[in-house]
Length: 309
Image 1 (cartoon, rainbow, N blue to C red):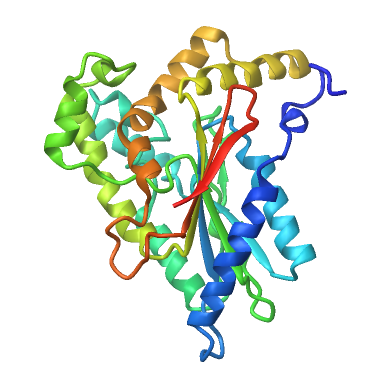
Image 2 (image 1 turned 90 degrees about the vertical axis):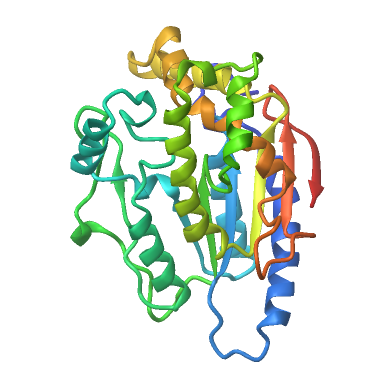
């Protein structure tokens, strides 16, 4: 039996990949039918969204290993985190918006290099050898920085990926109409939205339109690991930091955890409902039905229910 002293990831039971793998394989089979006449179709791209601490790392590792080793499909895992702005660009962004707490550090929409992501996906979908950006979160005392391009690994020309899993906490978020954004900000029952000016949330919302252009038109399937209560992210992060304190003697305090999660939580409050409805809704050239898997987990990260939408 796992004990509290074991690494946290080993205590997250993978009851999700047995649900995800059949779904992904069914979508790949459909994709192959659609591209049966092509000699070298582009890779099949899966978007994966999950709140922080839900077990994305464990799940993505299991998916990649299964697809590659059991199904013989060269699989590349890419994190949206590796497309954060460089340290210098993040400092410039923060300086340009000094009173907007949402962009004073990396994380929220607007703190990623979308032109880099766009060019990366264009190269990947053209089946070209593609350098894979790498980001070091420990650089500059935890502020982070992108590693220099010469150090980036590159996809193989002789054995290119046939499946790409693009994962991240904000993958699939879609901008809200201005009136809806205002309505949500005005609601009394909000955990973090009232901590920010409406104009600051509007800036984040505008940035999301660029993510939609770069991401959603390229996704062939989507997996949403949803929490029955988004508030679990505070508890999960606190558990992770407590584990770090036990193992390494350092980690965020409970107050620091609250401040850290508070920086991300406005996006959960604004955009999670849209992901639950379906990220392919209204996307030109994409069928919504059957392309998205939603897995709902409880407080213990165990699967409560799953559905294909």
